[in-house]
Length: 251
Length: 344
Image 1: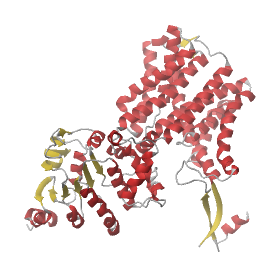
Image 2: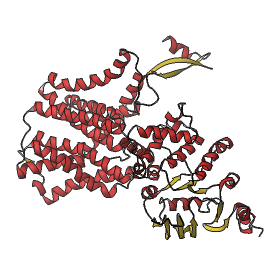
Image 3: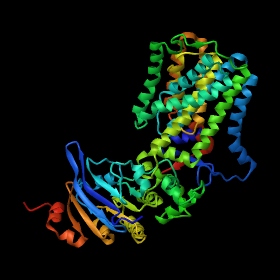
């Protein structure tokens, strides 16, 4: 089968919540291996966009195609099995389970079963490996602690580990760095860069522009649900539309 | 007493410190045992419970053996409730599963003349299947909404049978084939109870059970992990309702009768009450709860019409004083050392 030129194609995507238009007529495309940032002020529809692509919110109109196949309005687990993994803005951990058991959930999905046997017991080892990859100290008690007892930075990295476990082709990171301390960000950034080296396609919704600009190829800027600018970080940030969106216009 | 007095004196403050006995290695399921004493410490409570239940019919008279049969039946219902609840579905309609199993067995026996050895297994599967199919449309509902639907369905079926007169309506199907004798009955239901208890526990220990537990915590994140939560919920519901349908089919042959009383509120409320009093989660609480509530109900029979008053009052006392559940309270006391330590 011929590899389609774009891994993700979003066409005229809109979402209305009652009278409010959260995302208005958005179109963009991602090439395989591209690292794209999504920025914009609060309430500009960034997270809704992430939810739309991953199927947690059904679009009002428009289409989403992934690897050449239509995934518009499909259920979240169907989309995850096709190969789109995500993290949540608010870390959604399984509080009562130990950290490494958290990672076993995606390892039980049909997608991962196709990759490897994934026998009972073996999954525990893979889970611990994944946790080590996102910076959980392997020989400490941390991976065995219940998720509820972990600090916020660990929870976010646990999200990332669950995301890696799916071995997705497209990774959507929804405000991964929010609520992290500077040192936690510094510890997490290399993991994201490693994803980039592994040739994953990444869509990263983020508020921390400095860290984001270090890793992305290009950014898309949103304001009131509309994409107002797109391009390499430096060009985009110098454009008038973006400045007024962030700082407010003169008038 | 001295410590209590010291605690009350204002100069030094004391607080209770709780320490886990150090035999757990890393996770909940792995223990590091270094002596027979420690092995006994782990095995004794489990072995005493299981052996106790098996020996009970040998020492009880006929009346109390019949109470034991009812206790085990409610026990199966409570275990089934706890299992379904472990998958994030709060059911108030065990009577639905119970009635489905009861009527399937009754109909097969009354109209087709099949013996219990055939009707009970068929009713277990068919009852579980019918209940699951009936609840499929509402699997998407969560919490109190799911509870309301499961609560309403048995009432609806009961009224339906009453209105249409199906399966001999209010009279019900009577003079069904009995089980051979009381021994067979009591050991059949004890076997079922233990099978449910250990079966459900085994399931929850596997990765399959892990997904059910995760759904209880956060089903969105489970979906993001590529897991079809509705399919898992359907399976869990089927497994859970099969256990209750078995109990229903068993009761049909035990009483030699099936009627709209099979959809009675008791079968919905008692299992939930048992699980809550004993402590939901982990199944041992549900088991313990049913072995407290059902015999208690019989003991109170001697005080006549005050029975329900005391019964309800005691239930309130249980829930208020030990909100975590009696089993979890006792387990905590058993697994932890407690001592008073100074605080500044």
